[in-house]
Length: 389
Ligand SMILES: Nc1ncnc2c1ncn2[C@@H]1O[C@H](COP(=O)(O)OP(=O)(O)OP(=O)(O)O)[C@@H](O)[C@H]1O
Ligand SMILES: [Mg+2]
Image 1: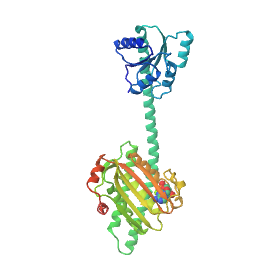
Image 2: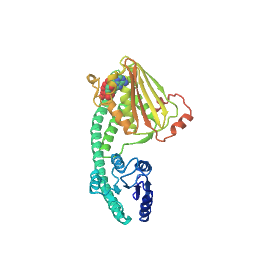
Image 3: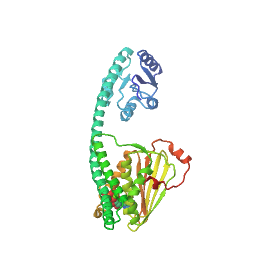
């Protein structure tokens, strides 16, 4: 914080320093003092002043060098700087002004002469700050607007992508139902799953609309196991068909996270589908959840084909896909990262070619600190997913 009435006076003449300090304090300013440039910099590190008065000739770091340092400093460069000096020849004054200082006062001078100059400089600084603040606000507004537009564009792509995923499973269930009907074994369960999928599409459409109407997402305090359970029950048949063994490793009392459950499902569905697609010959899918520092860590590991090192950097890029021939859009991971980061989390990948890949996401906790009580409450793998599905 820069205080508006703090003035730093730098001079190696102790008596003069004392005189100026007293005089300015009587005018209501707070005065900091330094005997040379180096000391002035040290003082400024502690308390940045609103204005600097500095002598030119001082031992060590002189006034000109101090001025250069301050003008190069990102936070200090706008602080008004006035030289006070005995070097009063026209050349000296010109040199000081050319350097870009705000004023040049020659000794001897009266405090009464100094005060109006200080006032004028501080007033000008205040006006400039108002102008800058206005410009900054304008820029910020413009940025948010641009970001929104970009996100909106991404969201419509994401919408099409997710609805595509949903329609694929709707068609899958419809197909199973048709076959079962032919065999006279129609089951209500498949129909429920189909309806569940159609509902997801409706809620996706709603969240896209909410976004474009500037509504906030449906953030709730939730257990990741709920979303995971729903996604896994959806993919149960697919896992079974692809001969993929599912291994779940969760503590029984996971801390809560703050998420939009639909979006979290979107992330999990994409990651698990990717894992399934990477294991065409079957394999093992491990889903592991752990409380981590102020976050929940969720790992989705497969024993699939793995990702070549040269692709690792690119898999989160929009439209990067090696599955273009099989209908891959390359948006899945891009959307995952967008959603996770929007929730304040992170997503990372590790992979070995021919051995498998592991995607790890962290989500901030709804109640920071609750990861410790989760540990206290004991840690045991359980099968709660089945009940949550
Ligand atoms: N678990 C995984 N194992 C191996 N490769 C993966 C895995 N997950 C992602 N990839 C690689 O990253 C690429 C990008 O994945 P992403 O989910 O973004 O798109 P996609 O799966 O190709 O397309 P879509 O998600 O539209 O079906 C994939 O094409 C694949 O090469
Ligand atoms: Mg994908």
